[in-house]
Figure (tube, rainbow, N blue to C red):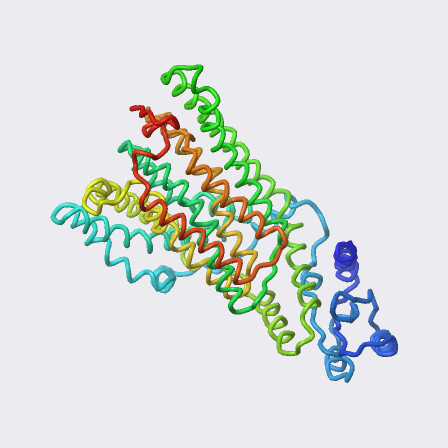
Length: 530
């Protein structure tokens, strides 16, 4: 409660000091701290024409002050004071120059930003330098050629590798376009094209009636992002920083939506178990399809409602919380001086990032988006066409291919991004990539697959068998438990990775005959054929 009141007070001072031409600073005092030291700093601030806003006692003693802008050397004088440990500008307060208002009122202001229009040469160079994964683009021509002259195994491997850099480039170009469109449309573009690879591969698989592969890939993407990617973020970030903090509210919002989708996947199996002795298989099959399609529509409505909430109502408030949380983290550091310097440096790195601007002309970005999407579609077509032959030759199940292998290729770039930002102590972004991607797969991609299957007369449903739903349910519960405290460490990451490996091993031996879906067996062991 004290921290919440402190946040509310700090947000109030943001608006007040910005209007008066003052800059807000956080002054930390050296231990031991007594009232005489606090009064001495207060006197120095008042004599310099500043204002004392509040005292802090949240692990490190200090005060919040407001100094005239420009400070005329006041900050430097305070920094050399024997009793002052550090003085750090509260950039959340200093950067607020616009009056408070609704997010919708501020969106037009964001669209008025002017960017320098880069040249074609600069755009090409930016694409080349965008990622070291671009060296794998050489696999594209080999993957296409192997479809006609080489074995299905070679085709699968080359196209498997080729899609990884294409997915990274797709995200890079989408972000460049989003910079020109403003927060709302840009967020929608990122949310849509962020899952373009999964959508393309799944639609191709569904068109070839590989329902088991599609369902397994949906389940595998959720498990991969929520267990493996999040686990690696906790593990790598915890190795470097021991303990990291993040915005638990934002993370739990995504996790709660993910849990909602998991419930929708549990219901078809529960429905079948409850009606197994009362209806014929044909009737149950029709009922499960109807339930799945109705549920898919509801999930899509929930997802788009979430987008409205995120981009039209919540972003500015979430921004404030994130920035104020950074300030509190700075004050709640350890008494150890080395740890203090590391946290201050991490705080400054996050706050001093330069504003991004487009790196290629608009027409070039749109053309690149179209070309990359076509390349992904062709490589995905060749990849999917080789699955059945690879399954027979490697003696593995389609379920394992969809659950483990396809999510790796579709989410490889996101995996790298999430771990990289976690290593840089940007855990809010890391959770947005991992848990947020899982939520998008569950609320957007999976329902779309059900609707697409409905349109092309393929019985794609939300029916998973008991084992698959149990694995998914347990995983989501574990993720919710680990993120509820707003803190992470390497041991929590190790547990998540270990659970994912256990699941991967179990599904390696999992036969397709036991897989869920209306083309697999029903829970009583009987098999239905579409």
